[in-house]
Image 1 (cartoon, rainbow, N blue to C red):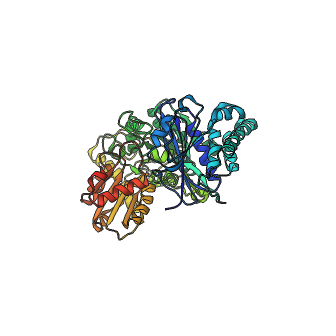
Image 2: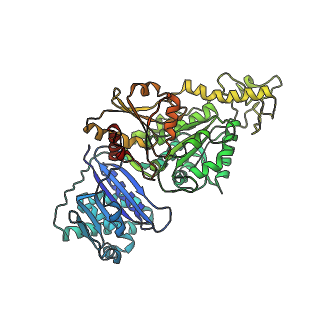
Image 3: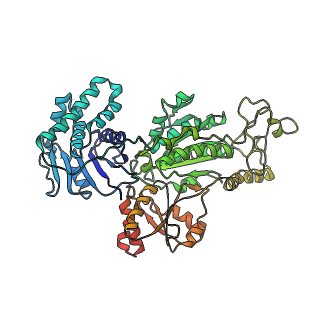
Amino acid sequence: MPADFNWAIGGEAGDGIDSTGKIFAQALSRAGRHVFTSKDFASRIRGGYTAYKVRTSVSQVQSVVDRLDVLIALTPRTIDENLDELHEDSVIIYDGDRTTMADVEIPDEMIGLDVPLKSLAEDAGGAIMRNVVALGVACAVCEFPIENLNSALEKRFGDKGSAIVENNMTAARKGREYVDANYDEAFGYDLECTDENYVLLNGDEAIGMGAIAGGCRFYAGYPITPATNVMEYLTGRIEQYGGHVVQAEDELSAINMALGAARAGARSMTATSGPGIDLMTETFGLVATSETPLVICNVMRSGPSTGMPTKQEQGDLNAMLYGGHGEVPRFVLAPTTIAECFHKTVEAFNLAEKYQIPVYLTADLSLAVTEQTYPPEEFDMDAVEIERGKVVDEETVGEWQDEEGRFKPHAITEDGISPRAFPGTEGGVHMSTGLEHDELGRRTEETGMRVEQVDKRARKVETAKSREPFDAREFGDPDADTLVVSWGSNEGAMREAMEYLDEADIDVRFLSVPYVYPRPDLTDAVDAAEEVIVVECNATGQFADLVEHDVLERVTRLNKYDGVRFKADELAERIGAILTDDTEATA
């Protein structure tokens, strides 16, 4: 396993935990180190435990693990919550001058650094900077050059003026100097810096970036955790490319606005989470029946109902596959990494327009809020190809008119894909309706046309299966007796879990599936394995149901639905327990 360093800050919601963690993650990234973050936050604005964890290494890291080397504890509960992850020689940074922290007991085998964070921050210009003082302390503990932290502080506060930036740099310096002056021990951590240049972003940001690169020029949405950051990323950026963002009054308005923009010829998108998907379902059917290309991003969270808005789950799979009255053709794409959030967003727009069909692009909370580093070339905008599908112009529209010169937007075709004319195309005037219609888009209840239109819309999916590479991503030993299958954000944890399993002489073949519908045929892979394990974050094994349906074989379900993502070492332990029939370890 690569040598890595694990850091966290914890306190109450409203204590600036998120911004502090982002500053440190950015500093590490700017120092040429790989970063992988995770968050634990309550569904409230103030109060309730919240934490931000950073794992960093000079090698790529793709998961969180059950280990903490340095913890900034702003409350006693922070220590209690993380005690199982702390180890001998872990460093706990706290402010013993605070009333709530005055009687904190640090376990004997750990190192407690009592630092007057608040008073040092006041000396630097204001108590609000106490977390930045703590970052300076962390720099001293892990021998991390404070210049990299200064660079991150300048990026974070640069738009607030030079005085604010300077005050924060002073606060960080005071934290480092306090440790140097009052603690003479060696803490045993030394964060190596490199000359590498990395991009640090989360899944929501990658989706927003992919939308812009993929030609999206209209976004309508309503704020909902954990999808809001897609809209926040696009706002102020998409306008630079001639696009527009609208914050609608609710999810119904959002999808209907997006549908209208798509009908007008703009690449269009909305993003929401499970409760919003429920509200959008009726319009989803209209999108499919009118054969309008539209991307609907669903960033999953714990449900049902309001559930746990800030916790991890993959429970919306069946809703996306089967939601809606009637039989609605659709695609469901599920990025497996943060980088894939970018690439699959571009692909979603291309598929939507090539097949004139609604596309669910589904991430989950773990992908949405996690920041991870990548080399800039991972997001090569010049390599993006935009495919608009069967669009007609004035020269070709005549091929799709009837004997009276009327355009047929729902023409019956062998591949199921009808011609598409943008508004203003001479000879392409037409209408579409949510009622069943004929080739011209006119309402009909004629039985033969009904059957032809239903069959035509369904053929688009079959056509896509024959034309598109809906493949799984494969890792590990292709000849291993054990096959692990997962979808969505579990890929990174599983890939690192394979390293733990390899150390235990357990060979695994791993298939990570980014396409839920249509999806790859796993029959041969399942037939070749002695043990098949499907990993997912829900209670019933919704993806395992699909695998069993497709291959007609039973699989072992490794599920997690407590609101917390899988960790690499946890996955390795649970898979090992399954293979040794240790039922207690897999419960």
